[in-house]
Length: 244
Image 1: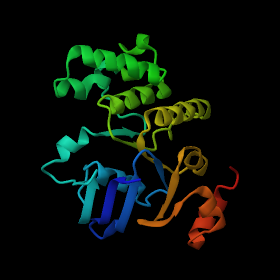
Image 2 (image 1 turned 45 degrees about the vertical axis):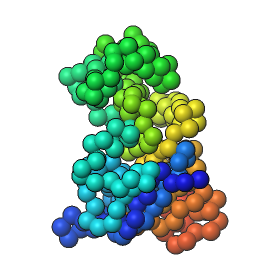
Image 3 (image 1 turned 90 degrees about the horizontal axis):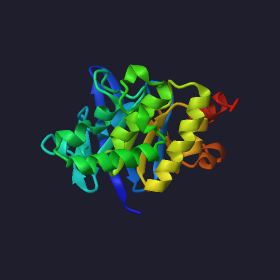
């Protein structure tokens, strides 16, 4: 299966601090890749590099074989959905306006956007009666469903999720995990999912990429990491979450 995303010897530094050492990584089309590791290990940096929120200091990034550059990043972003922790919704816009923001910005026909909104409400189990509410009037789980609808509005080829469930209480989180996995399967979506929670990584991942201190330590299934650790840190990280 061909890779949808390729990072080739990419690095990122902030002053004297290295956020990401030289890294090469391919992300398979139609699969869910989970980036996991402790805080500050570089996993969110990787996501921001892919979507072009920051530029690499070295190396190159390709989306479906096309290099990501300053000249084409705006067009490429329309092919990428992005969800962050707590949703990142605009507080002055209703749920409906948040979801439709980019579609209206690029001039999608009104009927097409209305039909897509109806489809996404059903897909994410979000009640259409809540679309007129503002983010402050929604629960945390509802806000994340709106954020997911916004990310899926333009039918992206790639979906990036940066700890989207981290701030939710356990019951809401479990419900959204189940719904998200069903959505990924139904859409055959290519997903990159960032978390620090091993149980969540196991639940979603076709492949786990474990990071530490700006480097990829090991990638593979949870069985690979447990049974064939490439580094003592792998076992240390898994054992630290043994209560799971």
